[in-house]
Length: 209
Image (spheres, rainbow, N blue to C red):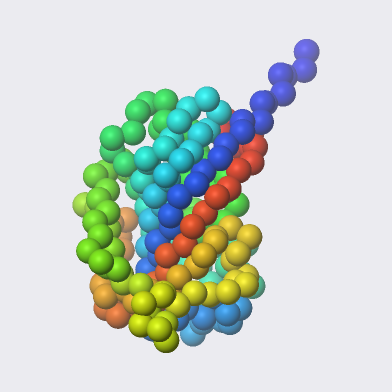
């Protein structure tokens, strides 16, 4: 008797994405260039609207910390890196049932954690003062500000980016500081690359099982 086929679960997420990395100046990867050494990245996902199957995941926050394996741009989407995944502690059991495989199995298709070192449910806090954003959790934090353009008001943007299939309205930031201490990694960076963007994605996947 054949096994029942796994159902493809529909999902959709919409929200804001914040990144701080270890690059000095703007990250070479945005321009398709290799780096001198593998980079490290702190990425915060603020899901404003979202649904996985019949479960509403609106208002959920998650952080992925990535220690890239390769410094080659060509390896970015294939090799990715190792890292920890942190999800809002105020999520329900139903939400966690879907959110954990969503991030661990890279269901959106553009996440860089290829080897998950662990998933933790923690308090995640985002605060804003003017054009500066401060993201904190028990194992790390980042503080970044939008970089203004020539008019002194509008943020600088990356137009027609190679990442535009996943990220929209990519705005350049200066990361004042970001630090992380977990899973055998203890990092602290000052005045590094940063970006803020929008995401609006949907699809279907069997990887929730």
